Image (tube, rainbow, N blue to C red; front, top):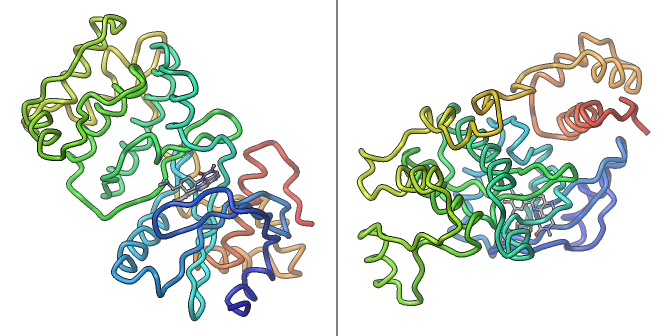
Length: 303
Ligand SMILES: CN(C)C[C@H]1CC[C@H](N2C(=O)N(C)Cc3cnc4ccc(-c5cc(Cl)c(O)c(Cl)c5)nc4c32)CC1
């Protein structure tokens, strides 16, 4: 019903649908106060049904994640019939489509992306979460060709992510999956056997790393800690993968507080207290989008 959109339309101008996934559609929008583009994931509570707890889990997880390679959640609006998640806009779309368009990536380009994936997953694990559904469809590309992890599932043992990253790396370098079969049982058998085709273009170092991630026995699998400074990820780089967040949760930027307090005619202290509540309401969205403008070198100004 239209009144489900009343609150949303106070703060955002809504544009076209830019994608759909499972039980949600995603629309492009613009945050009126900052002028920044956002993606709004729209879910209907009635059709969500049993998936409602999964969405609540995704929202709670994303409220605890603030990292340059994880899609940012800015604002959550829940009405009688709808749940709106206002998210960081990623104009480059899915990594999946990028790989398909290029058939497969050369090792140097795959390494740039894979270092970002390892950075995101190491951060997510450090926060006590695991993704569970790491695949090229859940990695989006932003305007600077950086990857952003999306679509957070339920918490699972982090080990579940290492094997998935092996499949992801294989997909980046080959353009197809290491284990695939239309018949689910045959696919499962291939996965449990752990044997996969090694195309001629893969380098010896690549083959070593793939084997270490795709170990069938989780105890033999490489850990995220050893992945961060693995020989293959270091090639061409001087430093191990940086996984700490550039803007950790709870960090309050002085310039953004100043602009907010001037605009709302509030003291800096009361503005700081309000932002520090992290209610994921309009205040959180405006603060985080101002912070994003600053990180992009744009003026820290409200419209
Ligand atoms: C098949 N998938 C599992 C869903 C698909 C939905 C559209 C989306 N998209 C697109 O497909 N563009 C082509 C544009 C686009 C631009 N920015 C986006 C920003 C965030 C998200 C997003 C979507 C979902 Cl379902 C999330 O849970 C989160 Cl945390 C984030 N999707 C975006 C998005 C890509 C993924």
